[in-house]
Length: 193
Image 1 (cartoon, rainbow, N blue to C red):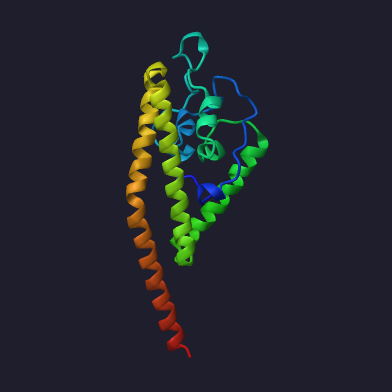
Image 2: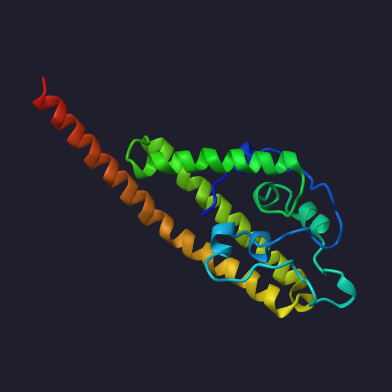
């Protein structure tokens, strides 16, 4: 999963507005627009412009401005909303790098328990927010969306729901690996003193 910032709603930075507020988002991938990282878009689901050729008069029915007003603190705006703004893209790249480094610490068993929990809290919040966004899009605009886009939003909900279901096990596994690593480290120190 793509990486991004953790924390509660009160810790979240204020969402930034995209450079363009046209009714049709500028996105190279409908997968990215519904909250799935580009790596998943490359795993067999075709990527194309959101709504291209499927909507009468070339007007995409989803109003991102309306959704932003209704879900102002949703992480989708920070990490998934279509944008060409170089500042936002740079901030996303920095966040991705930082969260990937934290995930590396989790995998290498060098993260503290607090860091493990913060990493997975972030993953939980990100998935919950993307589910909230996709659910609202389907509720408000579902009948007007092209079939392909309806399915993509539904897929986003399914995949993020599956991720949420896995988080408790992933936390337990990471903490158990950390404890085992800490025990091995202490045994090594004892043997070499």
